Structure formats: C-alpha cells, structure tokens
Image (cartoon, rainbow, N blue to C red; front, side):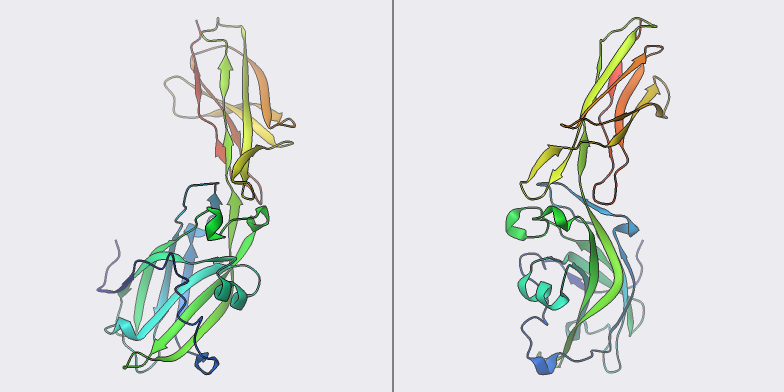
Length: 275
C-alpha cells in the first residue's frame, strides 16, 4: 500500500495531449531541474493490445524537485513519463506514435520528493492512432514531460526528456480448442483441433496466424496442472490439429508462447469425458 500524503492526482490526460510543453515558446524549453527515476512500465512486461479493448498498463516513477519548489505546492510543477516512436518532438506535437498516462497520483515522501503511480492509456480505435499499424508492435521509447510554473501561473521552464528505457508493444493472440468425440471410450483416439489468430491493427480484425509452433496441453480431472502432450505447427489459416489417446477425464487446451511481436495465449479448455 502506498504511503505518504497525496500531493497531486492527474485524472484526465486522455483526450488531450496533456503535454504543457507542446505549445510553449522556444524560450521556455529550458532545463527544469526535475529528476525522474525508477520508471517501471507494466511491471517490466510487454504490453499486449487487441483490436478494440482499451488497455491500461500500470506505471510507477519517482520525482525530485529543484530548489524553490515543494511537493506541498503541486500546482507549481508537473512530471510524467510517456511512450513514443520516432522523433520525440514530432510525436508530442502531433499526438501520433504517442502514448501518455490516463491518470496518475503522486504521494509525498518529503518536501522535495514524491512517488507516483498510475496507468498509461492505449486505445486501439483508429481515431486514437495508438496502434493503427502492425509496425507499432515493437519497442517504444520512454520520454518525460517536465514543467515548472511561476507563482502567477505562467510557465517558467518546460522540456521533453528522452530515456534509453523502452516498453514493448505486442499484438494480442487468441486460440480456440475443440476436442472430440465426446464422450469417448478409454483407449480410443481423441482429435483436438483449434485455430490460432492474432490482432491485425491495420484492419482491426483477427487473422489466422500460420507457421507457429503450438502446444497441446492436458489437465486431468481433479488436478491443477496442465502438461504438454503434443506439439504442432499452425496451417495457412492458423488451424491446429493433433490426435491423442483417451485415458482419463480431463481438459485439453492449445497454448502459444508468443514471440517478439505477438503476445502469448492459452486457449479456452475443452473438457472430455472418458468412459
């Protein structure tokens, strides 16, 4: 549980770029002196996005303020990470290849330091331009928006800062499973079919994913563990098929472990009654 007095909550960056630096005069693009550290995005795991559902991966980071600024006055400063591709300035100015927090909250450690947590906001809808091309399934760079404000509300210093850290975006995959016949006599063959598909961010549909190594897993009734019993390669339409021998009641599922551009998936289990 996060401790410390809450100093600032930003709840609605979505819908506007939210980067106060975007329209600032060139003279204001100065070093703020704000330090941001310990940036963690989605707990260090790849971010998997489908074709329609909004995704909100968690983020956390720490900030330290320069002399003359205090966490007791959160309206005088602003700092948060975002994801971008290509030029940081172009991404921030246009909103293309640009992913920012949906919300975040900072908690005071002392007068100069705060720990912050929240989530990024990724919407695959074409109007958002977050994942509108399959080429977006790659490593996104991490940038920072940093701002200081004068007591009268005018900007004092604003900047965009790049980091070497990246976050991987992946296309979501799905797998179906169908085991038959059911019921089946002990010792008789069971045919397990299915289909592996993955999100096409250009069309917002799921396409068959061919040439992928998939594993057929089985969990005996009354147990908690799945074990791999067969391996197969998906066909031109993403179709999967394997034959096993019926032994005991249990459930089968197809599993794909993913790759550098595509997330892993466990297909829904199909139960077989062995008699």
